[in-house]
Image 1 (cartoon, rainbow, N blue to C red):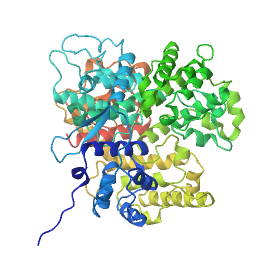
Image 2 (image 1 turned 30 degrees about the horizontal axis):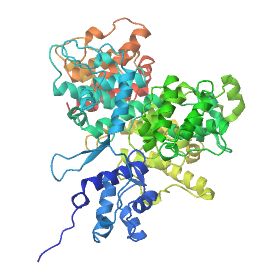
Image 3 (image 1 turned 90 degrees about the vertical axis):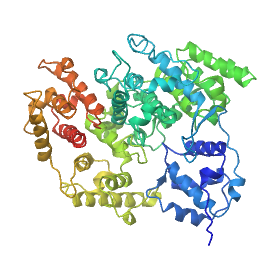
Image 4 (image 1 turned 180 degrees about the horizontal axis):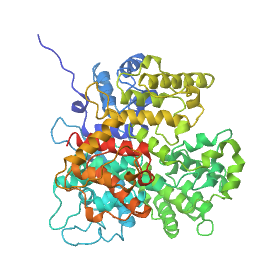
Length: 630
């Protein structure tokens, strides 16, 4: 008896159609995740409107959580396609940049990926500008290829990203001090081999996670192999981290002018930098132009009107409204960019990029304008704080502990992206997703309230979720005395106790042997045993517990890394002096080396120097996890 087989989506659509619907998915999703409530909207955009709503909902229930990724969306389209090819025949071509580069898979059944040529050129120009004075990247010494300037033609950018050196340099430009460049492998007497390139890419990807970038399904092997769309994904996140680094209330107290009526500071600081930039543009527009406002950095800026008024608002003595007299859009954009160039803003965008509405390049351009010309009247910081009374603590700079927890949470790639712990975790939903990740099947999702909630039910459903978080924590034997779900909802600092125990549980679970629990004592014992096993180097630095003051000079961390991967530590680069300045340099080197051998650590150098026992435990536990598989 013959059996009919449904042809998968990627086999029945043209490459061009696949590339274009994937581009549309990326436009309406956030960091690769499409909220389930927006799936029907995307289907309508794709003209997939011949399927009953409840069927879509039933199929979406096959995927956990409140969002889906691209692979899951394609499976959904395949489900819909089983009913016949009618929707495929009427799928409309989607608007997008002309220079869309399709990267075919190695085999016929492989997926196709793409990147936008204009974005590649914009990123490349940024690298050439920011790293133009780096003595290593601009030289031809020994076996170094001359990385900078990178030519636009061909695959020069992708080739230069393969060994991780350029990306590490750019990361330090974006967030200074992230990578200790002494830990990188450089070509000396011969070019780098593939293994040495992988080590550098370990540094890149683990450091990206440590500064809050989302690295999902991207491996060192993909980066060293030159998988183009993944290279550009990492490159954009590194560039974005630098552009958005200073868009904070701490750096610019004048941002308080952008608060909406009734909006709290806590809510405002949880906004993404992109949202804040849109508000900033609209604030500046309100000063010089009635009626003109934007909601995004693609279709709303395509005519150049918003940019013209924005420039006159932030730099009135150097710009004017002359571009608006130009009838040719391209001539108007060229004049706008000429003004921006005169202001010292090295624009990411070309005139065509503005007209086409490239979201990333236009976002980067506006971020540059903000960083150089914020045009927000500021006053004394203490006066600012006094103005807000109970919310004054929002102005206090995020602590290192809070930053580590936030970056750890974001490493799971759940939505929403956590910008401010005390606001973004209030409804408990993201915490429950993390519980489910660190202990699979722990969460009973039938008990979970999935946001968004109606206003009248928001407090009740949020606190109910938070109470469930406390209940799960107790199931995992967390010490949560005096902590209730209401404390989480209210943004109480008691939240940090829960987060610390979740992070600790997750880290220790990486070494769990079957059902056997691993505790801190076992980590200390394993580390000391590993140090004792080293027959080559005697006198390794051992320690009694994570409060041991001897850990502050990083010698134990460095010795353990060298014991796990013999010969990896350059001891000639370790400062032997016993002072905090020396310890800080050694701590930077030790953390980068830990990431180099594959440990994802979220601690900062200051945590080691100050002897923070919590962070010391996490560092050694991550090294133990690596050591057990080496």
